[in-house]
Image (cartoon, rainbow, N blue to C red; front, side):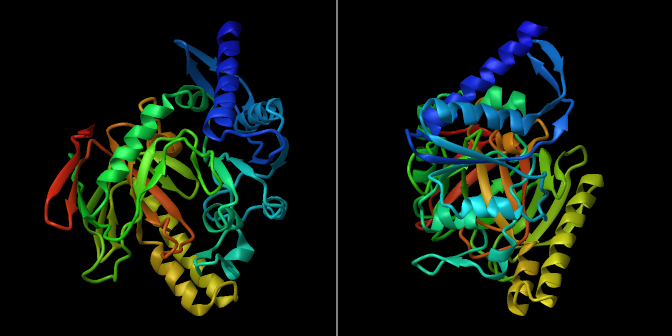
Length: 395
């Protein structure tokens, strides 16, 4: 048993080395900030056909491995620990202050979420093009483009060991091919065995690639990496926007984390926004999370943290369809942990809430996984290209 435990720990060290040297390509004297949580658990991990149980703060353990790997390449590394945060919680002031030092690289190794930037929600950052950012992290990464980053909401030891050491050249080629196929796409049609039948408009939108190459300023993504995602055109609540039905049958993000789905969640969509949610306990948790985000947005308008107009938009966008992503990591499987689930082969995920084009701000971004989808791209000339058939890539 001790040999198996040591083998797992050695693989975590190798994964950390891969993230530092291959994924982010950290150089000597670069300033690296690691943000983490100390949540001690008693995880049961299957590794090399044996079950290992022990007390450990998983996010902190992985953070220490990354810290050591950064030091090994000569980087100047600091680590800040805060309590675990849910989707609705604010980041600690010390975390926001550390980000304001503008490090070259930031690793957010979270038990759940990084936490919101309360001051920036009330007074957003603006980049040179006038884009608005309600978190200092997003501003440095996507606005100023001085930061590069990897973030791991919900990371576990076995996930970090299993899914990080992949063939990144192959992943990057798959991501590039899929991004190229998005050129001139006006809409995406998705159907799946559980009942999903949805049309997503994407005209004028550009896809994002979580391909594991976060080596340049302004780049970042998840570890494990492995998806291409896009923000749908924001609807008008009437005739324009996503329309149809989503049936989530893999897993679903909610305020407290991620739930594996036993009873599918049925979500009806019209004009780009959710009109109805039905199902079992999982659907109830989703409804409660959305309602909480709506109520909190309106409360922020009443107490002045948001303008009255912005409060209404944040409330409305809690029901926005904010993302379509396609999983491309061959080592990932559906485990009930969204960080891994959304990267799994034979899946897509559709998020509710905030999008990635910064024109639909919300207090939530809830990913939900759909198994074995068939996905067609529809182009400006009316032609079509099937990119997944019953979950299998066609390119």
